[in-house]
Amino acid sequence: MTAAVSGVLDAAKDFEVTIADTPERLRDAYRLRHQVYCMERGYEPGDGTLETDRFDRRAGHALLTQRSTGRLVGTVRIVAPANRGQGLDLPMQSLCGEGAFRSLPTYRTGEISRFAISKALRDSSADGIPLRLGLMRGVVQLSSEMGIHNWCAIMEHTLLRLLRGSGIHFQPLGPAVEYHGLRQPCWGPVTQVLGRMREERRAVWEYVTDGGTLWPHQIEAVAA
Image (tube, rainbow, N blue to C red):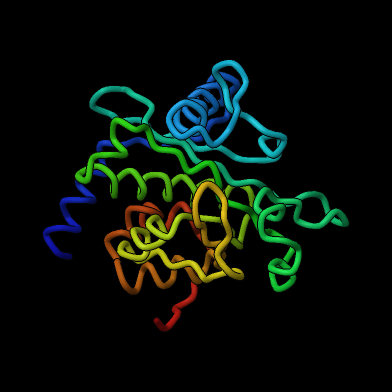
C-alpha cells in the first residue's frame, strides 16, 4: 500500500457511516440534499428545507458524519427496483430511455443516486477521496441489507475517474446524456465491482467492505 493510499484511508477513519433508519435521520439526509442540490447547485426545486422525491419511499439511505466535529457531511441513497411486473422504474430511466436498460437484469438492480457531499468538505482535495469512499461504504452496506446485486447510476465523468483511481469501476450504459452537464449512465454487478477493487486496491476494499463483512457474498475476480 502506498503512502498516499494509506493517508486517504487514515483520513477516512474520521468519518462514520450510519444507515438513515429513523425519521430523524431521514430528515437529516433530506436536509443535506436540499443544501447541496437546491441551494448550492440549483439542480432541484426542493420543498421548504428538505429535498425529496417519489423514489425515496423505496430507497435506502446512508449518512456520513465527521467524527471530530459531529457534522453531517454526506449522504447517498440506493433506489430499489419497482415490484415485479412494473419494470425497474428507476430515476435515470427518464433520462436514458428504455433501450439502454434492456440488457440490465430487472431483478436485484438498484440505482445509486443523490451522492451528496457538503460543500465545506467537497472543495477540499484532502477530504474529497475519503468522503467518496465513505459514501461507497454506505452503498455496500445498503446493498447487502436491501438484497441489491447490480448497481446502476448516472455520474459526472470526473466522479467516475476519481472512483476508478480507487479501484471502483463501472461499465458504460449507453452514451453520455445531458443532465446538469454531461453525465455518463453506467452500471456494474456488485460482485464484479468489489472483486476488481480487491485485486487493484486491496486496502480500499478492506475499508469499503469492512474486510468483507459488509458484503458477505462471494465476489468475482475480473480481469482489467
